[in-house]
Image 1 (cartoon, helix red, strand yellow):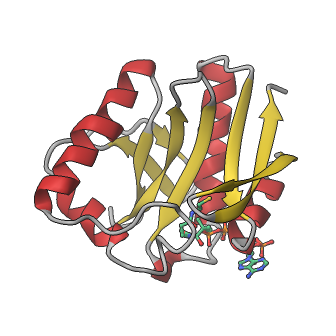
Image 2 (cartoon, rainbow, N blue to C red):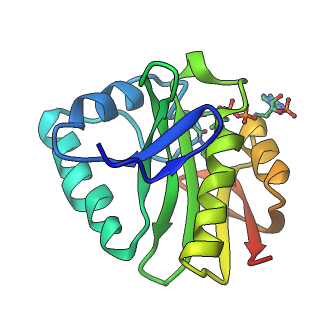
Length: 167
Ligand SMILES: CC(C)(COP(=O)(O)OP(=O)(O)OC[C@H]1O[C@@H](n2cnc3c(N)ncnc32)[C@H](O)[C@@H]1OP(=O)(O)O)[C@@H](O)C(=O)NCCC(=O)NCCS
């Protein structure tokens, strides 16, 4: 297995064919997708479509959503990564199973991802969007040194935009 990034407690690897099941399990919890603008997968074909048409193509840019595992026992706990949008914007995103919330894993993985984006990919800036009610995510973005960059309305919800320029 290719470990793309390794942190104190975690490692991040690219998703691959066969990971449809863990992606489905993650999105199956309404708490996990409460603020994410998507939802659970309709069926196995939907999970396969998202994996092959949304997640895997991003790797051609050297970025994407990466599976996050605990170093201690290889448990898959969620994902974190960068996504290139058609307008060129690079966005940071993350989501984890509820049982792993509140342990600093989002901050730890996202910090490594942002360092990778700035230092390896030489990105000039990284953006993020958080539902205005998603206090945990907003707090993570603040801990990463991201700054508020306006507000908007997406998927029927008020959102706050964040941005960080290359240090
Ligand atoms: C958002 C999410 C990724 C955070 O993951 P996490 O591993 O729990 O985050 P961390 O532990 O690194 O940091 C969370 C911080 O928010 C704080 N926090 C948690 N809930 C909070 C709340 N309701 N209000 C204010 N702060 C809160 C925590 O105390 C912690 O801060 P601290 O380290 O200063 O104590 C996780 O809740 C998740 O997967 N949510 C579902 C998916 C999602 O919403 N993704 C983001 C879409 S923009």
